[in-house]
Image 1 (cartoon, one colour):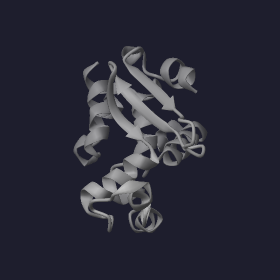
Image 2 (spheres, helix red, strand yellow):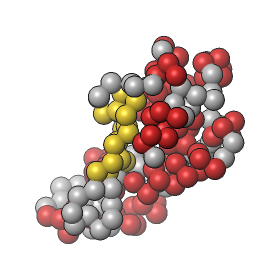
Image 3 (cartoon, rainbow, N blue to C red):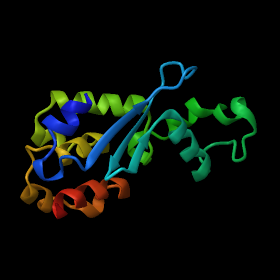
Image 4 (cartoon, rainbow, N blue to C red):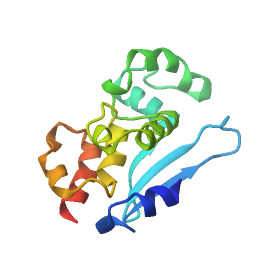
Length: 156
């Protein structure tokens, strides 16, 4: 998948700047940590822990100062139901994988205007989307993390 995203589908002018990573730790029950870096600087991370930490930091979780693993994860699924993707800026590894599947199976014109910000990220970096198309899009309405990818394409 990395070769597909970093070499085959990426815009020529940013090839070599964007790197995708995937880490799986023993005992994580098939959970992964995906990351996207620009020039070796991590821009976005996708994992269950990233989302749960976001819930705690934003005060969405009932456990504002969790002690121990059990308390850290207590109430996570209820909070996930309350705050779907459209209401947050952190996403799970499953959401990353689902977005990648949508991106790969949809027309690029649909991907660039997708409701899913991760799908839009893949589309912005795609070689089939030109700078003029990106310049026409309203970047200010994008999440801050995603604006970085729009700026990369505009300025490269």
